[in-house]
Every structure is written in C-alpha cells, then in structure tokens.
Amino acid sequence: MCRTGPSPDPPEGGETTSTDAAFTALLEDSADELYESAPCGYLSTLMDGTIAKINTTLLTWLGRSREEVVGRMRFTDLLTVGGKIYHDTHFAPLLSMQGSVSGIALDIKKAEGGRLPVLLSSVTKNDSTGRPQLIRTTVFDASDRRAYERELLRERQVAEAARTQAEEDRERLQEALAVLQQSLLPAALPPVPGMEAASHYHTASPDRLGGDFYDLFPLDGKRWAFFLGDVCGKGPQAAAVTSLTRYTLRAAALHDPDPVAALTTLNTVLHERYAAGDPRYCTAIFGVLEQAGDTVKVELASGGHPPALVMRQDGSAEYLPTPGGLLVGILPSAPFTATTTELAAGDTLLLYTDGLTEARIGEERELFGDVALRDFAADLTHTAPHEVIEAMTGLLNSFGDGLDDDTALLALGVPTDRPDTGSDSPT
Figure 1 (cartoon, helix red, strand yellow):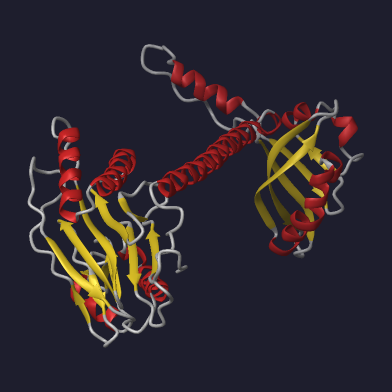
Figure 2: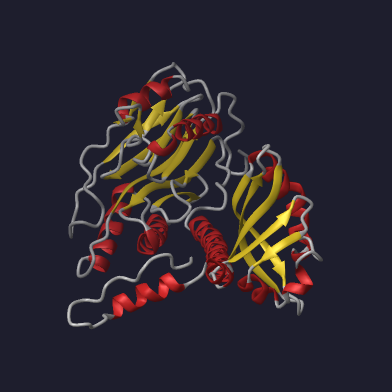
C-alpha cells in the first residue's frame, strides 16, 4: 500500500506515541512487500499450469529462486507423485467445474528432495469476456497440522492396540471363567437304570461366574442322589461357596442319604464357615431316587428353593409342595422337612433355579413367574426329560436381555418304555 495523504497530526506537545509510529510504519508498507513477505505462499499460474508469479515466502519453502520457477515450471512440477495424481483426478476437475476449491491437503517438493505438507486454496480469474485467464493459489504450511494428525493417528493406533488387547484379555478371561464354571458342574450326567436324566446350564453373562449348581450320583446299587441349588452372589467368592456346597452335599449323602440330614449338614458347614465374616448362604433342593416296582420313589427336601415341578403322563403339571425350609447357612440351625412322590412311566420331575421364573418379559418387564412356568410345562407332559430340557432352553433363549441371572435345569423322568431296571441295566 502506498501512502497517499498526510500523516496524522502528532498529539499536542509534539510527542509521537508508539501506536502512531506503528500506524505510520504500516502505511509505508507497499503492496509488493506485503505480498512477498506474507506468512503464506502465493502463486499465479496460467491456465496450462505455467507459474507466472510466486512470492518469496513460497520460494523460501521450496528452496528455489524465482528464475528457476517463473515461466519455467508448472504448478504440478511442485507436487509429489501422489499429489500430481490427486491434482489431475480431483483438484483440477473440481476447480474447472466450480471456479474455486479450498482446504485441499497435498505435499509439495522441496529442492533438496524433502516434502512439505500444505493446504491449497485456488480460484480461477476470468477476463472481461468471462474466459478463464489465470489461477491464483494460496498455500498454507500444514506441517503443524500434519504433525497433529500423525499424533492423532499414533494415539488412535495406541488406543486400537489397547482395545484389541482388552478384547483378547476378555476372551481369555471368559475362557478361564467357562472352564472354572464347568468344573463346578458334572461333566456329564451318569446313566440311571430305568430312568432318563437331562440338564442344562444357562450363563447370563460370560464375564462373571454364576452360583447355580446341580449333581446326580449313585448312593448304592438301588438309590441315586440328586441336588440343585443357587448360591447367593456372583464371582469367585460365590464359586468358592458353590464348590464347598457340592462336595459337602456329596459327602453328607454318602454318610447319611436322608435329604433332611444332608441339608442340615450343609447348613452347619456354611454357617460355621461364613457366620463370622461375610455371610454366605444358598438355596438348595436335595433328593433321593429309589426303584419301587414299576415306579420310582422320590424323597426330597428343600432349603428355601423354588418347588420342583412334576409333569405327569396324564397331562397334568403340578408343583411338588416342600413345606418349611429356610435358606441354607443363614441360621445356626434350620428346620427342613422331607416330602415324597412317585414317578410312573412317562412322568418327569423338573428342578430349576429362580433365574427362570424371575426373568422379565414383555414391555412392562413383568416376572415370568410360577404360573407361566406351570402352563408352559403342561404342554410338555408327554415328552422325555431331554425334550423337556430342550424346550426349556428355547424358553430361556426367548427371554433375551430379560434373563439377567444364571439358570440351572435338571430333569429326571421315567421313560414310557422302561428297560430292565436291574442295577446293571443301561439308561
């Protein structure tokens, strides 16, 4: 800019302030000086790309002289190989269609062989007839931005690696939890002469250990013991209680198979072990199977556990009342009462944990409940235990996220065509 008028009058007293001096210096700057020393690069090119004008700032970035560039080089000569491809396939077509483009990221080559990341903004200037005459381009140094982008990329890569590692750790944890969970359950149910047995364990979350358990094992040549229950809580502490509960019930049954005696022993062990610290208790149902001619006698007792469900060959489904029975381990002594029933050909006894009946269903998230379970079981009265378990497994899966607790299932039944019930007979 050229100075075209008188300078401002100095303040009274003849003194010139620093602000006035700066303003005076600014007025004395020429347009060429501002163009050449601008903090960004400028160049003008003919329509064929030949560089017609370039400022000192950009020449300094390139490490070239004006004589090397003006009239001798084209704009694309300043670009890297990748930049030329992008220019020809994107930059130039957009500029031709729109007359201007801005914020295009490219790399330009330096004379010594390095490269400089830049942001380009170009506009086409037309002559008086409207024909394109030249292209003016502003070049911004994007080194800081590129460094920032690289830092973001590194951080993203670090975060992605951490996420991948976390997923791998989670998978290993889930595998370890699954192995530990399986160690708390029988690997397979043993064959019971004259009967069929089936089971299923539904894990609500692969990231936590459940406290549900079940087992089926022989007492002698004629009797078999079974139990199913649910330890309060989740995680390693619940798993420890589950392990203690399983082995206590097994040992108690071999010493005295009476269901009341077995639960009483378990109550004593749990209370003595955990009463002084963090209280731990469970619900459990324990029973004994014994062949009785054409039927199987079942004697069982419950400690605060949901009642067993009996599905009869005649088409009825009913809960087996187990009066009394407190939570196991919560008091020094707890009363347990035994009850008995008989299973005839085609009858099935189903034991389950409360994850089944406490599942939430429907838009109102209501409890599935005992009545709905009984009604569902009524349609399974003519099916074998393994078919009952398959149907129940499908029911559990249908609950989706409404099932937020582990669920154990154990079905014991007498087949319609019973084989020889001798002690050496297969299932």
